[in-house]
Length: 212
Length: 370
Image (tube, rainbow over all chains, first blue to last red; front, side, top):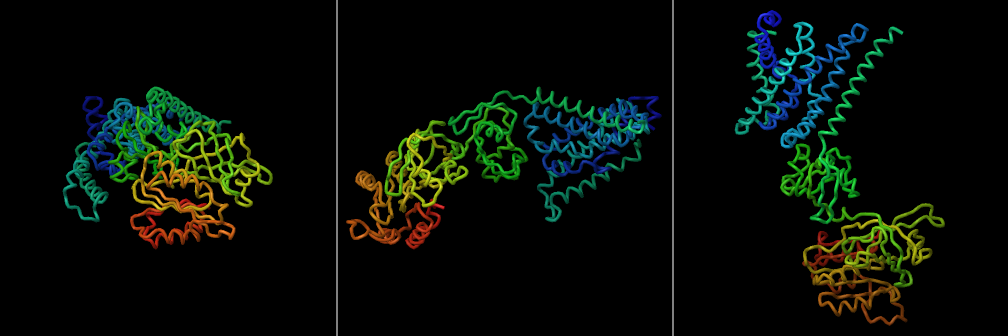
């Protein structure tokens, strides 16, 4: 569908990529990737906001970098027998790790407050499966839908945005939960997972409307 | 050869990419993470350090030879490296919170390995940690106090001054000599007053067969160079102002000889009864000086006691074991604090007597020779 519309209205195609990545294919709520920071940082709205922004930035950046890596290095090497599909797993992680480190230095330089509100969780993005997941799914889309750089940029941004929205919503809900009487056994992670499940249902409902 | 090609190419691609990224990170680190020179003010101007910013506070202090205890190596798990950061530490990081109590957070206590030096900071380091160092000195005087007790006076060479509190000790290094194959360290309390910073005095009793005391008694001469480190120890006057009972034997005199003169200098008038136990008169020392202090200071009494004076000894003072003498003189200890310095046997016996007089374990401080 994207491929079809891409010929007629590129703007619409990009909008569809964005919407599907952020909502119907929400990486957190439909694939349950990136759960650790989602559970631990959603306790505070301010931290959730910072973490969400970091994820948006990192997914957008790493998706594009990994796309170039895949298209301009790994794919050509495949002709010489290099197993691009296996190698991409390792190299994507390396790129993400370096990018996150860079990001950490930048955030520390720009805003000490944000740096501190994220603290140890920033380096955790390095091993956040949502970010690696975004890059790997991106490669699938390159193969099946013929994504270009701009498509990938929007896709990465959309994926991060979806995660951002999910953690912001959760932080907001948990903020209100503070005054609610939660059964002792469900406090903390328990009630958070249940709420995540209900949120996921709401997001999945739209899958029939936009299908990548 | 052809089957190697993909392996070589894949390795080359992976290594090349990693190298490029590592280089990029190094450049970023060079230009992004630069804080310039930061000043660390330790104990309200007690010491001001200039360090290159960007490192953890713990590492910066280590680089300046201020050794803060740390067991985990700066990973933020052992919480030994707690320090008060009064200014410039930034907000408390989430990595510190689990290791700090609410009270500590309110008191500006931080985990120093998790605090990055980004700007000028003001910190508080417990004085004892600050001043543990290795000192070189020259023996200025060796004085016989009794037939088997000597006083050793060491003038400091490098560093030239030492800060300590009355009651603390240093570890004196006895070098390899004779049958002693390698340097050993033995602890001796300072008998000099803290206000005298350029020299220390130690009181040593000859231990038959003891490596360090034998060395001091037979080999060490005035003018020789010695090495020691310190100061150490929490044997010190409390801040309460309560009346005190001091009990010592032999070279256990040292901390009290320092304390009483320190109190006199500082004008700390605190009721204080000092019991000193020896066997014969020839084992007594500094008695005249202490008697003199007793006359000058209305809050201080000195009671030497001999446990085994021979018939030839004309001894007008107290006789008997020090524990018996203390039991006789101390009536109600419920308001008193006890300070004990001597052999473990003497300390345990004295502590038991004092317990019977109502001086609790919490109010009994001791420095045991071990």
